[in-house]
Image (tube, one colour):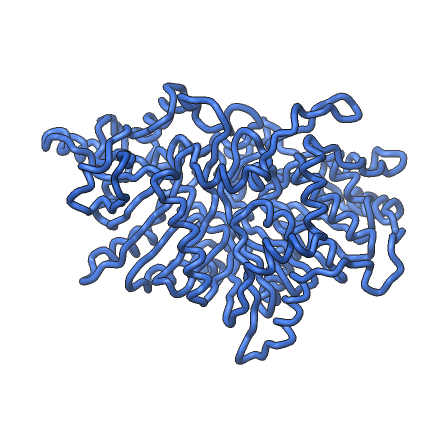
Length: 599
């Protein structure tokens, strides 16, 4: 696109953007916030030698949303948002509306979203470009310098520019006044906050106030100014809309599918009793907290050690384990470096216990990734000593915890133009089977109907001593392609709280146990030979299968001699109906070993 078109579009934005402010006060009419107050106090009490932080684990989806709204409304100076997915469902509309209100109060608001699965509507982005001078949006890594990627362009990107197309910004961050930030696994889409009545994620964030926010600000600034972060006027389709419009079109008011649910969280965001009960009372005051982020250069120079700072730090943290590693990851497909670390730990004189909470085929929407995890179960159990617990799709505890957040308030009302709200721009996984808005995103069909859960939280606890919450999936994509971010908290209380949260997801009512199958030595030998083949791994009787606890028995580890008397096998893919996705899973297990990186 010619520089003259960019200059003309910039002129349109400068002339058309609103400059009006809704507040004349010096604090820009920010609300009182106990969350921001605690962060400011931590900042004031900190010294370079003795930092002070306030840390809140955001397991509950309602609290995670309310914390965001409260902080946005409490901002006095700046709000920076970084994300991988931004949908235009209730969640996306609500947060965008709150950010625009903050901009109109006088707060500087910047949004940096990965292009592939965010917004995707040049008309919306044209309106955002001129919504207010205090609101600026950039998209990260648009392959063809367009906001909207068509099916043809998606295919062309894989053919012509695959390495660039395959490298995404996976960081998640909401930073307010460079003082307090939220980071973790959640994107701006209903299913990350239990607002999707069909399929929701068990996810986790952490809210941190104090000096670590300076590292968050520095990281955001680095990404914001990187050449892959493209202003809206530089995007061909948005540029065209800006230059073709006679006058800027105002951004329409949000149209919520479930307005009562939205009204509830808005009320809670300014309810001091609710905030104290759900957030303030759960906050820990602690010392050292580190925020780490890979650099944008990771996607250009993947071998550069400094560019992979967060990834390298996570690996070192796990490699130093002495007694126990509790790992929660949606995708149990390990990079070569992770394999080496776990193999070395398991071969030590006193190997640490390795507990892994992950998805089952019934709970995941990334069946292709699951197929590769399924292929390597024996390696995980024998070579690395993993205890693997796979989430049940109707897990009891998530359903109970999030019942209020997921209240169904009836059918989606039509918008002003008679159309239903657009849903599901994308999902968290890689490029294969994750772009479409319909069937390809959906989990495998189950044998029973109803709402289900999938695991999306990414967390590690090492030796009950320190813990990580972030965006890193501990897989090849997170190691080598996507940029990742997260926090490491050096506090035994926080580590114990996170450990208990992960272990809760491994309880029998919430997860199946993966353990060796009771089978003949001949079947085992054939299975070993089949699994060793890079392709044509077709033997259906794998080394391990899924087990469920029998009634009246006490939960125990698979290594316990009484395990098989108290657990019953429920098959390799329990609760999954016979379907094309079940067949695809088998085929990818047999033929797809070479595609780990792009999945």
